[in-house]
Image (cartoon, rainbow, N blue to C red):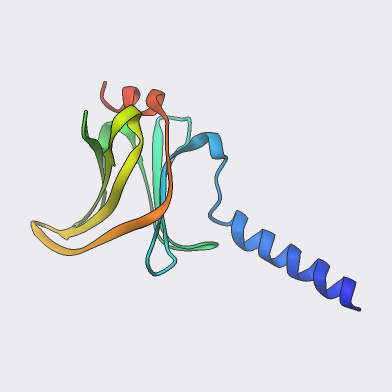
Length: 138
């Protein structure tokens, strides 16, 4: 009985993790927040990117946009990528240090020009995808 319970627990936790999980090679940016939420941008390898925010296996917000519909800014100090849903803009900022190591990150939520919230990353950083940033800026 204990083995069956353990197998079921592992199976359920695997399903929960895979609901928000992407192929690690396609994750452009990911971090954790203080409330155990995850901010993630995934390159869908079809000219679109997906922004996801929420608990592992329980995304609260998901937006998929074509690269040409995103507002992206890159520079030596960081990168910003905006995703829009109706009147709301979700701006993901990634601070970069030496050798493109992530130093910080956040998502700022705006309605029109009013900032509603800024959610800061606390760690768990994944940042990569130079091919993605090159495509976004063309």
